[in-house]
Length: 202
Image 1 (cartoon, one colour):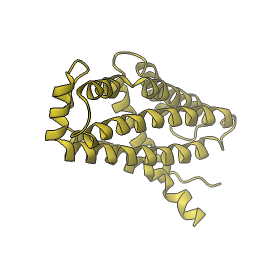
Image 2: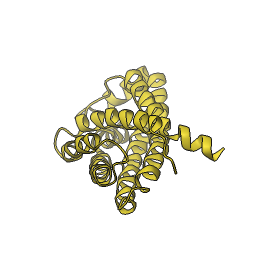
Image 3: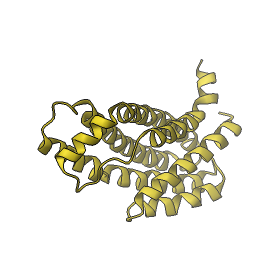
Image 4: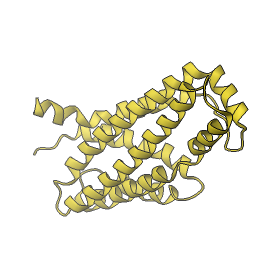
């Protein structure tokens, strides 16, 4: 069983990306940070089924991301000098996952309480749902820069993939942070497939 897990574990990154794509496809254009409480409630009453489904998909995607990050860490730590750098990247993954789970929880709460929530409470939750992104930004930064250092140091993945991770990590802390997260998804997909195609001999 452990050998089979080790062989297929990297493909959890593919599942993660698939679930996030499904999340974005299912969710609508949610109210912005300046929306009134009445508008927020009206939106979630009209789209509660889709929004609840999207946030559940997002939460499950976060779980698969952590499985992928763990398999990536296991591969990177085997290389010379990779132990601490792999731990750094995994720490960033955990922080990113916390941010993603929080986003899913806030969106789910708004959809779930649509019929009973007070407008002022709905407005407050909606502001958090829009602006509660520092965990995602910092997590993406640490995850990608940690992977850059670990991949370049250990050669567990092609070094070009490691160098691509560096600008993604830097961009995560800029106003283009959401774009950086989307590119992180593409990076994870490529890394997932390469890890599967290049099984470790250990």
